Image (tube, rainbow, N blue to C red):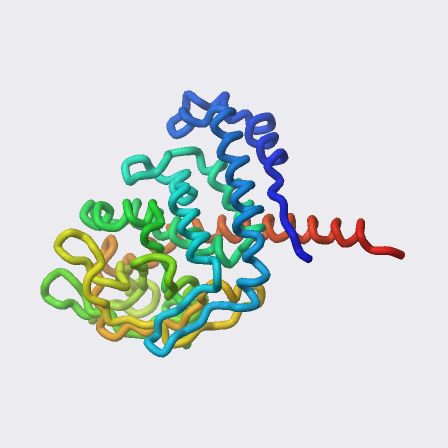
Length: 323
């Protein structure tokens, strides 16, 4: 039976003894990173990953996510409860700015926790992982109003985020994007188009999902110089900032990716969905690259995490096998 025990001792040694994080306490963002705090975070994160997330990995992949007749998506048994525990423990807030409800710890601490959770259950870890990237993009390119509206909920993992780039006719060549963004006259845009391979595009873990979507405005230049970025919530917000009317977007289908069936990789259809421009018009690719670069770091951590999980299971098999 596959199993995983978070290498908390190794992580503590690297952070405290090799990197000597406590010696950096005079630098911005490192003041609260004492050895005692790091040890407590690493130990508890390791326990959560090993005892809560790892047992859901195999069963979650076998059950997978399910698209319902109303285009909603349900995650495997146990995932909603695990995410509730994740959210209430504040694991998604570790390295986020204190201004928006984060703990402001150094990213190296957050990366260690992310490694544990990706090793234990990568499909689960992708939900908050993508949200971190969306938070980074809004931190840099979002307007003050957008930051105030979305970031506290996203940092708290009460709302999760996505990145919508790929379309049926284009993957790496984003200059071929066809999704349209028509101005509505009130500062918003009507987003119309289809995106594919959208991780966490639809699910039942949170009350709202905040999509960052690349699209073209009318008369935009051809190629990548004519791409803009929009924030498109699953549910439009009422006057108090709470989810209200359903936006005009839906999951058209679930893709099937080996090993991460418990993460809803979706075809997303936008049919005049209400969205708002993030940053400057026709500068969307630069804004999205903030999120993409964070995702690249995340992929590196995923590689390390899967190597650790493979090593642990390979070692266990070698010790048990009779020959």
